[in-house]
Length: 244
Image 1 (cartoon, rainbow, N blue to C red):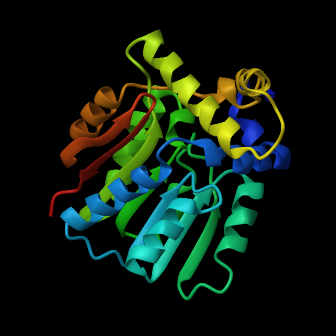
Image 2: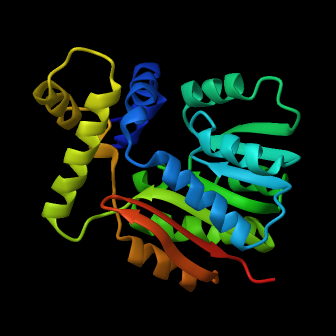
């Protein structure tokens, strides 16, 4: 789906696309490992997380993991998809923390002032979201995130990144298709899963950049201790800290 402005990522604002993602994400490889890497990054930086900003939060899966580990007092979840934020509200019903749900479009900076008023933050986390933005917007967003962090605060991005070779991209596609087939619980053949994967509505919303380029952009924005802590083909976890 292409909007009147030429944007393809608006498909994520549709209920059916959101629900399709919730069903298929069970097949994403090594999800538990990626979350464990995020936890270990928080631990090694000896971060006492009292405030969390989750960008492109979806249904709040990343924020929920951080809450389980650290019990922060305040969490702010930003997403431009109302169906996603509705799922997040359901997830956190009854949770003993101050939680704000912000309908914000990361393609622009319009959401920044309202979120900044709720900060600064010990931790900013994003998961499978920023790769929908053009590269120049990724760069400016990393600078904006830097300004939203407390001194000593940490930004962790769990993200889809570009592969250096079509061979590695194919290896990732095969791995993800196998995962979706194994966890779908339906009677589709592997070929049917493959066809559905390549025909999915969100496929053209991806604008992937190299993890190494993105680490360089973070360093240019002032982050220190920047590194890629995990990578398997298209999936990566990378992080950087605002100096004290």
